[in-house]
Structure formats: structure tokens, C-alpha cells
Amino acid sequence: MEKENLKKNILIFTPYFDPEPFPINTFVHSLSKNITINKVKVITALPNYRKYSFYDGYSFFGPFTKNEKKISITRLPIIPRFSNTSFSILLFYISFFLSSFFFFIYFALRNRNKYDHILTFCGSPVYVGFIGIFASKLMNTKSSQWIQDIWPEAIQTAKGLKNKYIINTINFFQEKMWKYSDMIFTESYSLTKYLKFKFPDKQIKTLYNPVREVEIANYKKNVNKEGKLIFSYTGNIGGAQNLEKILEAFTDLKYEKCELHMCGDGPLLNGLRKKFDQKNIYWHGWLTGRDLETVYKKSDFFILSLNSEGRQSLILPSKLQTYFQLKRPIFCVARGAVKELIDYTDSGITSKSDNKKNIIELFNKAIKLKENEKTKMAANGYIYYQNNFKPETIVSEFVKFI
Image (cartoon, rainbow, N blue to C red; front, side):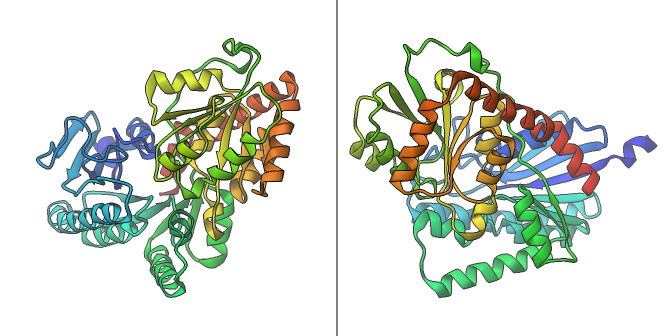
């Protein structure tokens, strides 16, 4: 009993959780298996991400609670994202803030001094970090934020925000939020370095995002593709991904045995699909499970493209970890932490310039690569994944730091 009491009780606060596809899912399940953990409490929203309604089995009436082994989940009522419009997303943000604010007042009264740490998963909306800090004060425990996005840069990239007054106001509150948190977790060394310079007295630690482990064929055991070279993109299709320039460059290639597979959903999907409607570009929409695995297996390169503003370039998207795990070389058009890590690990080919000429040159470089060169890049990425991105490794780092 005494040993049990020494184990930690951890509270995770996140706008998104399983069945929504975010790295916090893998982290929570791995955390619950760590021998130093007694229980994990997750407070989150009713799942709705990319469904434009609630997920199957959920509604305005719940279910609001679930228990599985050492994990207990409380889901808060929200207005789901009914579309990709800014208004719909804002309604979701506001409803989640209000639900979590009032819920934590009630929850803290019943659970003060019962938790050892509160970790807030700070994807958009990043200001959920304020709720985590507020809850930690009420519950008399330490708080940390796991930075997944940086505002206003993420909004500037995705929505084209240009108003300097709004930009400065958003940044002011974000930096206050970072300042008042007891600890900060980042998902790249570049961001850790930046924040340590800005907040020299703050506890700051690099904590990579874990991803769900997926097994697909090794690179050399690829499926028969009739001699075609296949590039695949998976994920959000929006302004932050800079995909229009990738597509423009691809359509100008003179090499006929190339295919481009676009897997994902987002605000630019319909417009880009109409503009780039040709026989060697395949638009799959949002794929999961075996459908997505089928695309993975026949891919020669995974495309990672980002149009990151300012400090947002210091963020490593979880897609990179997944690509490393899947043993394929990466075709990267991005600046900052992503390019630096791919270059450092020699796990793909990169270009920091996103003009069409340079992207065409990158495609031609990919076409000229020999099979053994592609196999070596794929292996390099997988080795780095094994050494740095395994869920149990990341959880151990978190537990040691708190």
C-alpha cells in the first residue's frame, strides 16, 4: 500500500483525445503503463475533429465518462466543428473554454491535493494552457504545457492574418501563458533553445510527440507498381501545408512514370482537386485504417510540406515521426526544425525554398536516386525513430522531468 501511495496521479487536459487522431492518445496509453504511475485522468471534449459532427456513438448527451484500466476519461459538452469555417471553429473553441472553466471549479473542489501534475496538450486553441494553469492553482499542484502550435504564426499561416494589433495581442497573451506555467515541454530542440533564451529561469524540456506504432512492408519489400515512382501526401490540406506549389511543380514534370497520391481533408481540398485534375494525381480524401495503409505500402516518398511563419517553423509535426516509422524516404519542402532534422538524419531530400523551380529540381533529384540510396534514407529515419520517438522513451523523459 505504501508503494502504491508513492506512485503519481497525473491529470491530462486536452481539447482532443481518442478516437480523434492526435499523439496525446499514444502518450496517455503509454503513460498509464509506466510503473511510476498510479492513475491517469483525461479531461477532454466530446470527439468531433474532422467529422463535422460528433463521432459515432457520441452526441450532445454524451457519453461523458469512460474508464479503462488505469485511465479515466471525462468528456465535456461542446459545440462541434460543423465545418472548416472560422466561425464554426471559433464556436468549438469558446464552448470548450466555457465547459472546461466551469468543470474545473467543480472538479478542483473535490480533488484538491489529489494529483501530482497537470499536463495541458496545447494544440489549437493554444490558450487552453491558461485553463491548465487555472486548474493547477485550484488543485494545488504543478502544471506544464506541451506546446503543439505557436500563435499568432499558426493563424497567420492558415488564415492569412495580417492585422498587427491583433497579432501583437495574441502573442502577448501567449507569452504570459508560457511565463505562468511551472514547466514547458516542446517537441523540438530548436524550440527548446528559443524558449530557454526567452525564459532563462523556466524549466523547459524537449519532449517529442509519440505516434501510434504501425507496421508496413519494409522499403525493399514494396508492392509491384509497374515501374512507377509514387509520391504520397497525408494530412491536412490547408494553407499551412503549401501544397499548391507542390502540385504546380508536379504537373510540370517531364517524367511520365510518376504518381502523386493526396490523402487528407481541409479547407483547400475542393479547390485544389478541381484545379489539379489529371490522371496521375489521385485525390483520396481522408483515409484511415487499411485504406491508408494501402497508400503507405506503395509509396516511394512521403511528402512533408510546410509554409511555416516565424516561430511555427520550430514545431515538428507528428507526421514526421510517422514517416520515420514507416520506413520511407521523405520529400521535404520546409524550413526550420523539420528540414534540420531530416538533413541531420539523412532521411530524405529537402529544399528550404518553395518556389516552383526549386521544387521541380527536388522532384528530379528524387527521380534520379538509386534504390540503395532510398533504402538507406528510409533506414536512417527508422533508426532515429527507434532511438528517440518510441512512446515508452518519451514517457520516461516526461516522468523524470516532473
